Length: 236
Image (cartoon, rainbow, N blue to C red):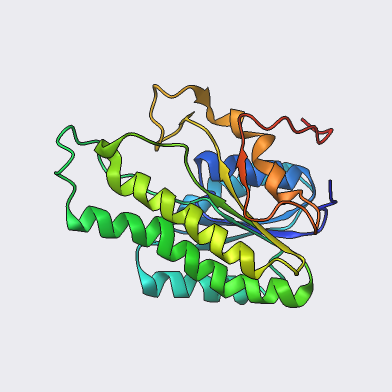
């Protein structure tokens, strides 16, 4: 297990839910945290929660379905003038559950893929090259164990795309100090998972930290399950 103290982590969708838990978990390990939300206002609660840790905190904002806002978000991060050591692509949206599985509109398909896949790709492209130059990087793309639910077809297909893109990028990182992996946080009681989910959002820790803690020659292009991963970091 590597030491993350002093590393800088950008976590999309960390104004609440799983992303907020990841921010708290990484801060407990000594990471400086860049909180992301749709708006600057939405980041305030997580920033407040991070004050109990001896780490630096920053906030950036932007709607991930909009190319201009994604590019502005990338500029905000670069203007912080710090290295990005960990990129945690957590943010995602889910379209409505349709009993009529043919009801999903083109707009719903496109919005889902823009947020869940294309924005993730853009953020990887913005920060992975510098990670390679710096000789260190950890990229975690949040996926889902969803299957057999065409009622949520755009979401399920987008997460398949996340898996495939992660696998492909991993090939290019084989001989570098950068590792990219996927993380399934499990079915959690969040705005996305709903009130009937199996686990509280806090159950994502400490397992969600596992792919950030792999060694330089560790898993690459692999799947991690937050709920199933038995991780002892000595802090939780």
